[in-house]
Length: 256
Image 1 (tube, helix red, strand yellow):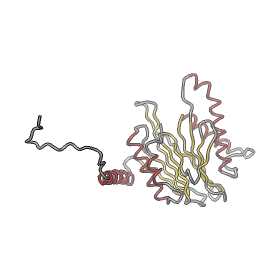
Image 2: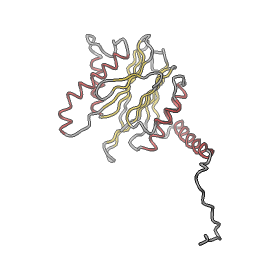
Image 3: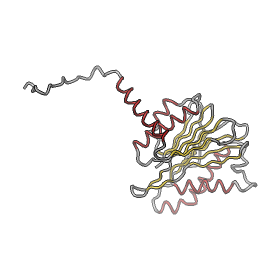
């Protein structure tokens, strides 16, 4: 399992992915699930992946291979992020169709999903969720973020905080809290976290960071978030309809 999240904001885009892959409690490994394609001044694209690792790696490898063919529409000559999302969906279908008979024979799950976003030329930044079938949807003002993988634990904080007008700095804090909540509840998601911030109009990717286990900033975020939650919880109004049992003093026995 994995956890990936991408946000589309007025200020730009934020991407984050964990690095844990497991096939059982005794088969745990780390694989990078973020891939970037940057031609400074022309385009900056980030892809996050979840699902069958061999499928996702092969699909991205095929996308890179197509990029070396100047006679084909590819990730380097496409004129819109919509075209790039379509290319990735096509690569995913091609790999799945190629491997399906062999994986199905061993009852192996072939599902895979991608988040792909970025900016090409003067087109505004865009963000897409590519489904396992190769089709895709685009983020909007009403839905400014996508998640793939183990999404349920980290979604509530993003739902409450993220809006199109959210700053990149606040978005990064929110994403890290989302990861902290997910990792506390699901051992299949783990460090390190790969993080990328794209500034709208920059056509470069200058803000990349890998957050390892024990990172001081992440530890501070985790600790202060936990303390803050406990503090707020203690101030919530009591449910008046709940009957409280009077406390019994140590030297008293309940009456029969």
